[in-house]
Image (cartoon, rainbow over all chains, first blue to last red; front, side, top):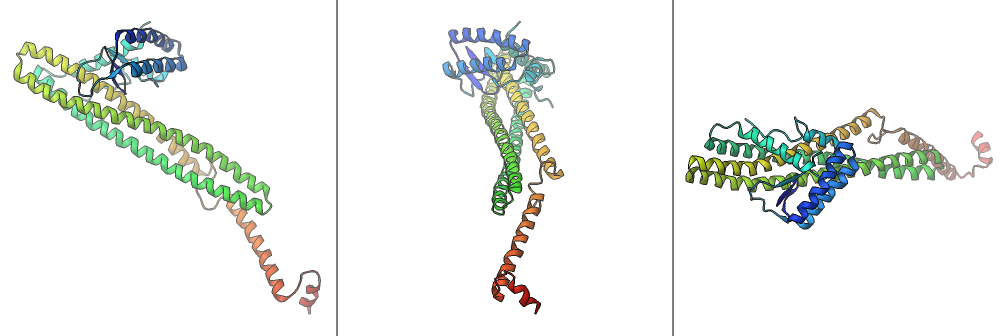
Length: 96
Length: 245
């Protein structure tokens, strides 16, 4: 499946890696809930590393959608709140 | 509770639907989305320029601080040679404070460099996708029936919309970081200007004044000694008599 490391790039990874990502992802969600920034950083870093090490870069001109999107590994708790809140850390796409 | 991947996907999807909702029909969706992509590309380029400007400012401050460190070091030596350990200590204390700031500045510059690299990668990825999208949109318009086109447009718009959302995030984060750095750079400038952070950029710090006073005392002594030598006195009592005569 295709995984996007946000603000970094996209990689194709196999099912085994994908399963591993899901496990770490659960813990990352819990770390955000607990407000544990160090743990969040460590878990996102592990996810990003697993993707980089085991994945194959998807060419830039491939316009398919990704199957999974992983937040940046240096995401702060404050940013996590903004990212997942309604107003969002991602600005609305430009409109005229 | 849910993991972060599903939440990130949901956020990205919401941004894409917001974008697509603006267009009224399939052909319009394609052109509208394409125009937005071009705008976003411009935004990334502006973002890169902003980061580069902020980085240059930090680098200028770094150069300034480095010069002050060299100067303070020389002053400490000068003070010590003149037997003023108190002044030498003062100079070294300031030097050590500045060196700490230099370490911070260096770390900040590196952070901005990372942001710049990320934006450049985003810009490259988005450009490539925009180019693909442009070709796809012409094919879709020319070759598909309305119903088929709807599906194809959805696919193309979702893929590129995801890239756009990601680029938007990269721009926003770089902007946040750049603003933080600029605020810190301004704070250093202000503290320097107000003298609160030791007026190390001025040519006349208190340390300078004391050292130059020391130097002029020394000069007077030296000149006196030279004059005495010229007149041929040794300065051990005898000359006073001669001078009185």
